[in-house]
Image (cartoon, rainbow, N blue to C red; front, side):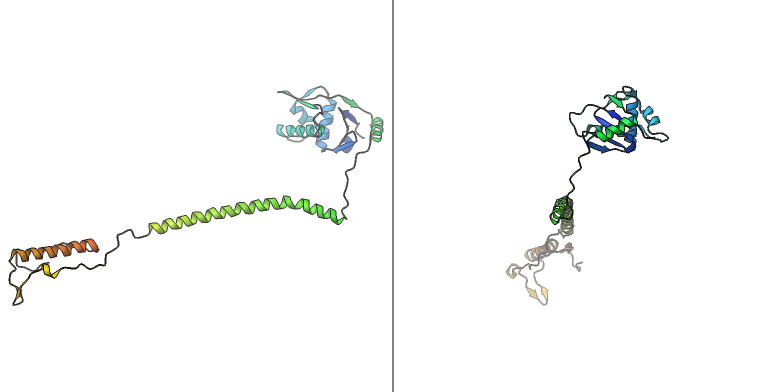
Length: 252
């Protein structure tokens, strides 16, 4: 048995083919949305809770309140059909449920068939000639930019990621190289020159004839101190003058 046709506001609802039509425009909805709209039409002016909608529309199905809310939102969008002057078809009653706000007119099967036959046919959308080369070229041209745009953006992002990665890697290598350099002072390779005129030593029979002279002793002490200081300053050796000039024994 064919379901009766019902007019909900400006829309003529035909449940048998899951369509709603208005002014020659036809929309095909999901069967669940058609059942939901018909149930609202059967209870026009009543506030229907989510539980009532679940029990009567989603029969033997386990659904949540979110599914009901989403379905009503889609049904509202279809009934509005991008018309800013369209009336409110389904209103939300806070903490109660939903209510159909437009008048409802039911038709018998015969009347529904007459209305469907008398309604103007839908305006078919223009179908371009797919055999035309120019049309194929236009389709390719219009479809190409959306595909290339994400690719260019992805390449641009990848370039900058690699750039900053290599820059950070170079900075790390430079820091490691600088930290590994030897920070010690360079060793001086210049020779220390002594003026022979500053040393006055008379050798007699392979020995110093005036070792006890205070001048010769001061020269010996000065030379030893100069050598020790120079080695400590310009080399890695640590030298300490341990010569005792007051006793006659080999130095260490």
